Length: 151
Image (tube, rainbow, N blue to C red):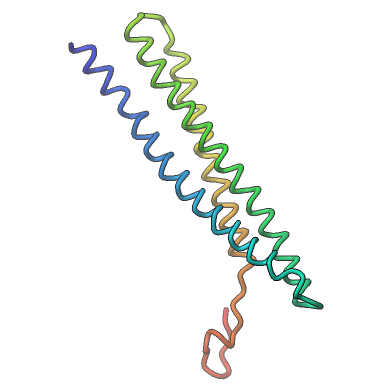
């Protein structure tokens, strides 16, 4: 009974990692959904635009396409990390019930899962920075006092 209890305790850490990954994936898919909605809105008005407005719309669509690609890669890293964590939990149970010496595989799975999770977070940060870089708020909407400039 003690070994089963210890096994369940050792499996809890990866299980908490799965919860964190699930939250991250929820955030990423929400972000992807907003990007896709925006791209659809712009595609709906594409044929109605001309000149500079059309050029700005096309530039924004290109940026949205890049953002979709980045978020998709972040989601892929997150899903692969979750799969690896699931395999890690399975390895822990196999070790406990068979006595096989799979410790190296467990450590490797954990390191791979953390690496993939870090990759997902790096991609997420890249997408956020890319999105913010392209947002410019006109001074007229900021209602700045006359003579002052936004920084």
